[in-house]
Amino acid sequence: METLNYRFEQGTRRLTAPPEVVGVVGSGNLEVLIEPAALDGACTIEINTAAVGFGPIWAAVMHDFHQRWLLADTRISINDMGATPAVVSLRLDQAVQTMLGDA
Image (cartoon, rainbow, N blue to C red; front, side):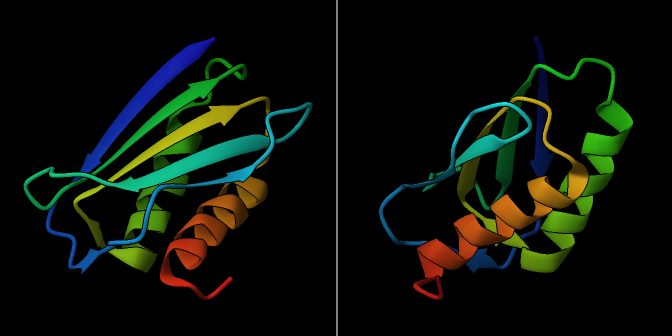
């Protein structure tokens, strides 16, 4: 297992809904917990993954996600069992949309 942590500053969108979990940890999938948190305007993401050694790919996917949503005061926890970057992006977008009531 590998744990990766990211922190993005200067977000503009704050989520106020209760915490949400999307996805299911299983072979080739992941779960995402998203919740509001007092983080001085930052968005933090912690990833626990079974796919060791893919840090640069995770960093690129997390950067793209942040650029799409610009979240502030948001904590995201990801438990991954080898999901592809496309599935990761899908689950992250699904989590935000659920918090916004768009899902």
